[in-house]
Length: 319
Length: 291
Image (cartoon, rainbow over all chains, first blue to last red; front, side, top):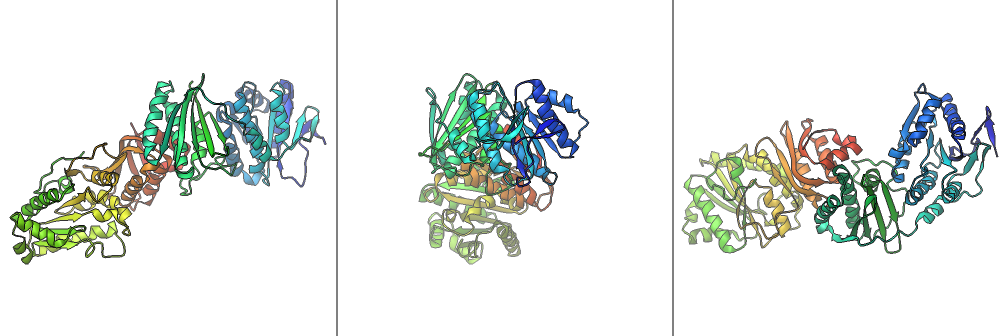
């Protein structure tokens, strides 16, 4: 099904669906400008608040196209804000919450050429989780996909978007899949590191583990400010192992060519795939802050739930 | 800062609230005699609040070591009782009530003509399942400013190393600005400790404040919240790390303060600044100075 307004492809209007989540496949800058630029203009013309979160170079193009006259548009460089795909959904929900009464619109481009396969996998998980988090909400999230992306990424976009489009128009995705199934498929086994530092811990060891992780990160070359981020995240992960993961866990530390990685492994379970994807109330005694903080502080967070328990990998780049 | 061997004859508030640690009956007796003899000689009233020790053993030990305890008891200058019969007789241990009890005790000693009040309290009850025992650290932190800087009181808190877990004792002893007796146990101090400041009203956290230190943070936060001082400082300059739960506890305490004035944080580690970036609302009620 294709709907057009003023000659521009747009997602089909469905009265029985209040949340719209189309993917737009583009191959050229002109396609991008037409498809995304016209979407933004239409939303602003309807006086809807718009969040545009795309890679910086695309951001410049769109700003030039739309102009800064539209006060209702919020511009965000996704390369920064969405460096870790796991933190994007929180940003989108924050924006939607602030404008819940005005049917907010979002352009979200979480995957760009150059993303690592690990990042793309977590971004695909993010796309699937959008469908859970926004179910029943009055909002539209348009996700542009560069057709230069690997085929496996484009295939997943068909599974995570109920509607897909290109310069020729929009149509229902015949390959759309249950978000839980997509997330399950993203739970690929994590590669084993070579020769990691291994620290086993229980509650009484947590301070020593922090000290050891700090010293190790310094020797690995992690800059001071990033060390603070990484240690806060490691602290939350190991603390969660003690609180929720059976009282003890194992921390492994290693360095890749571009990043330091910490992995906390314990006997915990994580049943809600949306944990950490919405900004928590920091005063809440119920907690819920740890996973959200990990996503905010790290460049990539990978969470797996093998039969043995829970595995959380925290990546922070060395740059 | 801890004084290794405080004066037994009074002086600054920091020297008049002392953690006395011992590991044997003989050590206990030595501390007891020094303290009581000094008080009786100065014309002060001496009160002993026993917990694990039979009250009769207190007076017998004094007598055996040359202190005329019987006469002191007869004239009301020496009072030996138990914690259970006195400040633990209520439904639960309550630091707010204790502050008032110390004021009454000091006033009563003065009314009886004594030149001051000194007290020994056996603190081993802190290891038992007593309602409110979890507030003992909060109490030890608060009384430096709320009691000893206001009242002519000298008190030695007797900590028997045989009756308290090592980590618990270390944390409680660190809440005193003066310690006397058996040195710290091998293995160093606690991972996280809290102590009152010697100058302006406030407290210092030292070490690393993660999940394992949550009880210490909760006690320090409770002390911050209860402080009647208009301006109160939390010194974090020797704190290596604190986590989001610790910051939330401190921020919640700042919001509960009766004076409504912000808590001044001195020497905040980088982690605190980063967390306030993530949760700006936690910075409300705090004045944060960096390192």
